[in-house]
Image (cartoon, rainbow, N blue to C red):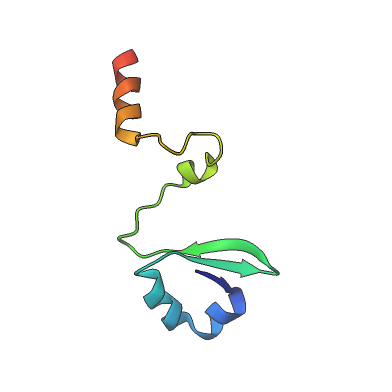
Length: 71
């Protein structure tokens, strides 16, 4: 869900509840500036940065196993 920062300021409780179920992207002047996520939401900032660099079908566990096998 994408929301404006003023909407979050005015309805924080509402978006706090939504964040427990899905990611809330907060924008300011039309640009994304923050994310509000629930405690059980798994998030990887590194993988977000690698979107478009790493193929979509990479299995993290398999990649880790391969990397450890090379050491």
